[in-house]
Image (tube, rainbow, N blue to C red; front, side, top):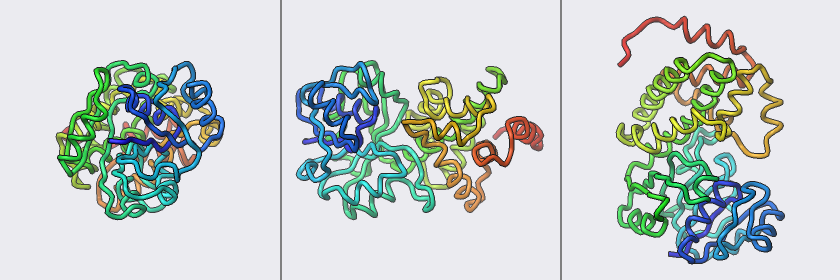
Length: 324
């Protein structure tokens, strides 16, 4: 199975490294000319994944047309840009969606965006607790690989599996997507807890209640509860809610320290997807009558309609209720 990667950020580069670990050639598309040159000439993505020597089997290109004829494309462009990039990408390959988010404006999951750009393409979702620098170094990682076509899922899993990279197959594409999208917003909230100095009890409570919000939303969208309780849901939530290596957590910590959303987002070379997902997630949840107070609180901080103290006061003043 011939593999290509769309997206030359840290995660795309790490996945290219995984796919090339057996010596099979992997073609990676990057928008940035310096990334393409760095990978091809110096065997390193110094802009996004500095210090990680890349396999000689990884080659980079700046021309999407070069991806024609490949069997599967790992789509790692930011969620808000997936549609535009795929519309310029040759059709015919299976699309493994690795971006985590919901398209602003339309409210569509990434799989819906991809299906619109490449009608009839086989779709899969790869998601889970994955920091790119650890994956690139071969440290132990497990992910969910969700695809309705079980035969394709088995072929993809066999192609990508490595001693340090273990895909667990699923047929619940919606569940894998919902987990990855919602956890980004909840990670911002956990960062706020850290930045505001609210303590470990508060962070643990927020993770648990955030997981309840993720589950309510996921079930309303047709996800299976076991998917949300697995690697793509709870597993990814725990990772990104507890480490400054998470872009979303770091954004939230800045908010918790009192920095302005505009300044924090303007100063970022990499994308904190949760900032774009939060408003459309909140709007979609309201339309479905799904209660997500933590997500609403993150939206209020991002749009400047409330400060940290006000948001915390509102959450703690909510009516008492049964946990389940």
